[in-house]
Amino acid sequence: MLFLFIQMFLFLIFFLFICIENLYYFNVPIMKTAKIQKTKIYRRKCEELDIQIHYRMLLQRISRHLSPEEVSFLMGKPFDFISKFETFKTKRIFMYDLLVMHHVLEINSMGSMVPLGVALSSQKNVYELHVTILADRVIYAMYKVDVEQDQRIIEFKLIDIRHDIDPHVYSTAEEVKKIRILLNEKIDAGFFNEERQPYEIHNLCCAELKQYMQPKNLMLVLDELLLRSEGEKIVRKETGYGFGYVLAAHTKSTEKKISNF
Image 1 (cartoon, rainbow, N blue to C red):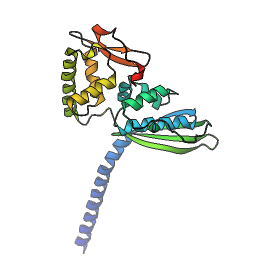
Image 2: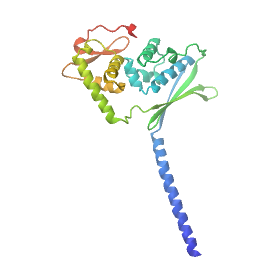
Image 3: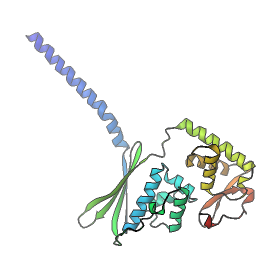
Image 4: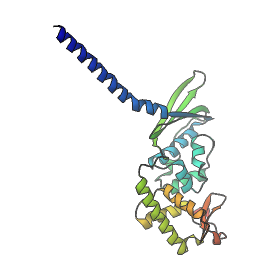
């Protein structure tokens, strides 16, 4: 009887040890994720229309799996243009910029950018954008703040990927190589003898290489051409509406008219 009792006691100790060990390993990923998690809060006071436009611009970017830098690049804007708007550092965006974004992202309808025919309140409210960075994703949560009641009402929540993490290293390197070869051929053929808009170069790469090319990979190759010290060098030419790329020897080429948009 005593022997049986000792066996049961040892079995219970062993079972308890296994449970504790499994619980530890189960919690390790959660603990690691919690350490990685970081939330930043951006606040502004504005009309409902501003938040509606903010939501649509953010949704269009995320749905196309593009980073803020990539969208800014395609629009011919400084690389932090979209990021500043999304985090309320830029308070307003011009209709022209919405038209450009609509054009370069090939969005079907302007209604996807601006809420047309919708009755919106002109009253200004306080809004908070909570940006939570996790190990593999970024969560955007917009809240309308009732200052008097100290309450937050959720307006929308969108989940994006981490654009600073590349899970396809080898395919990315191959894509960069293809773009590099193509653009060098286009330089020799005189393509950059006149100013070219970023989205125009991107469309060319997708068409010539017969597959969708990530704008970030095109950006890498263009940066290489900008830093080139020998041979035919590309320069980034700024205009009143953005920038384009042109061969250094042809910087006096005629700017493309705004009507092209």
